[in-house]
Length: 461
Length: 126
Image (tube, rainbow over all chains, first blue to last red; front, top):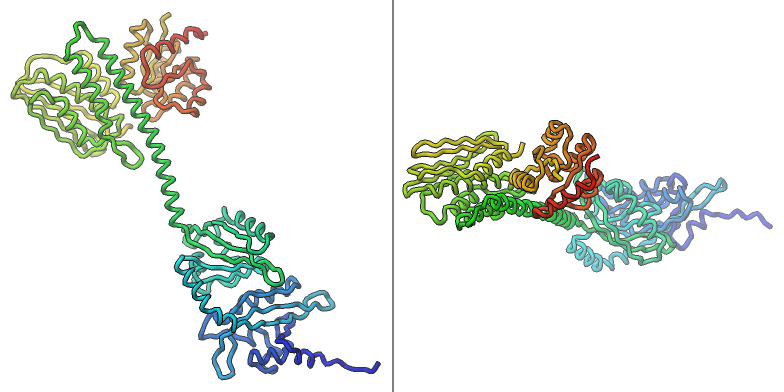
């Protein structure tokens, strides 16, 4: 055999396809002529330089040279010793006439393993897809418009390299300023709610085993730097590269408003349930009060029973149940609006008589367990004095609130009165109700005027 | 047989009615209370000589009928007859631990309450 030295440099130069060869430091060691033609460069221009330096970014148009994604792919090959096929990246090339020319690529990086078992070289087959991408522009534009219209953000994720390509809307959703997010998903996933992180990770890993076009749906929360929580819904699909590497492609939708609405609805429902239980409890309690009141009165009935005994009973029941007509909801509590309740109660009691009545009540909301005793006291006093009224008799009722939530109820009966005294049950009921309110009750009767003053705290101590 | 009854109820009207009802039926009302502290004072002043306490589940000033029943049972071995307007399962289960003589829902009738009391006589005080 003759000694023939094989000129491998010449062979590489003559390769009919575009190839670039890098060493383990990502410095260019050689390129095929086809590569030089494709990129409008000369060998002396690029050999010996770091790839990112030989193919620099365009300072006038940020984002038009995706150096970060390229670096991630190359470093992945160095680390794993496995070939890597990139998704479409834009990597504009300096043009001979100055400026940059727009180019799209799907580079394939193939490692060459040295004698020591480490990656010694990486061969790049750049795969110029500019023509195809530009041809698909119209379709891409349509897709962008559709995504935009649907308020969707699109993403593409490669678990092997963590490369995370996405539309600017994704960065916005995760609270990153333009250019802040970087080429990989890690900083994004770091903003995922800790309670969702594991679940989403498991979901993605399990789906990665599935065939192409397997649909993946998952929802999660993003915790923004200011602590606010954003709910997103992700819909995607498995799409492998020609070499079988898993890639996921999908869209992201902000569903915070929906979640907030659902939460508010659920909360409202819980409150409704609580309120219903509360109302039930109140009703049963009031019915029990009615029954007890009637029993108290029944034990005092003497025969023959007169209509006035029935009227007394009806008035007592009405004083208790009338509170329910004025129950309204303030926050989570049931309250009785005293400024409408008391005048109505007094007018109902006085209905069949025509004495002059004046009622003055401040705007006061009372809990039903306070409003009922007040109503019972008003009823007992008015019904006791009504039979004693003469045409010139005046009834004046007032309920006012002083500082510290102290309420004062005064009932004044002026003018001439027929003689009479309060019944035993009425006295007993008033004393019991004053006791229940934890209040004080004073009364005095002089010729021509009766005055009673009840003082009690608005809220239960 | 006449029972010595304590009334623990924050609705004074109901307490009044209960008292008259018990007295008419020949029982003895030995104490009245609207909350836990008053119930304990009443039991102390009766020296524990109470056959049964009629206990409202929700008492005044946020105190709780079940807890009050627990104190009466543990310190004086006084059993309770619970009275409540809203008796859910969880509440009932908690009340059961103090071996009440029964439960009566609001609104109750005179017959209901008195016949529930009668059962005390069977498990009379040791």
